[in-house]
Length: 221
Image (tube, rainbow, N blue to C red):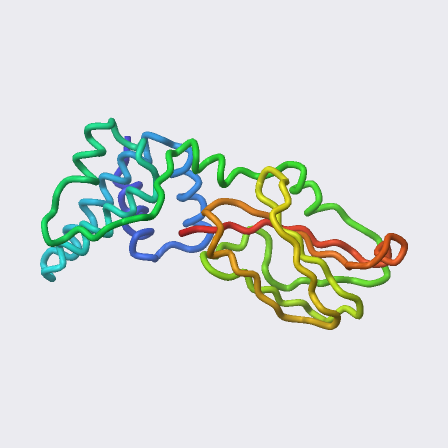
């Protein structure tokens, strides 16, 4: 059941008037509470339509709301209800949509944490040389580019390794010595939780002098 307070919170969320903490709490509830997600999705359609209807933008509002529903997954309603809601014919309004859709279970799996890598995030290491990464912070969200900013350059090459949330290594890139800023393109990644590891790209004994940084990042579309 959705309360008046829930509706007020959702309206503030859709208007981008929630704090980062409030938004995170609400998004977690949307992922974990199937019934709340169903009701919130229907309310979103009403909200977007009524918000713009008086501005003669009803078609755009409905299209945006339909896309929001598709992004959350096609198992939010009974099959017939979803087909009627999202795929109903709207002449002169609809545009082709090639973005993939995911069920709630798929979304939960895609954004699940990897215990093995999470343990590495908080693991302390005693080193004489520090790789201090200012950005990205843990759980940074992005849709296109992961921007790295180091406090200072390191005199040896670094190795950036990307993992999915099953701890499978996806790619690795060498970073030249004394680099303090570099980017990693994530546009070809599907949405979900990923991890990066940054360490000195040197032999064992020399590598022990440097710490390793591990953090997660979220790709959202």
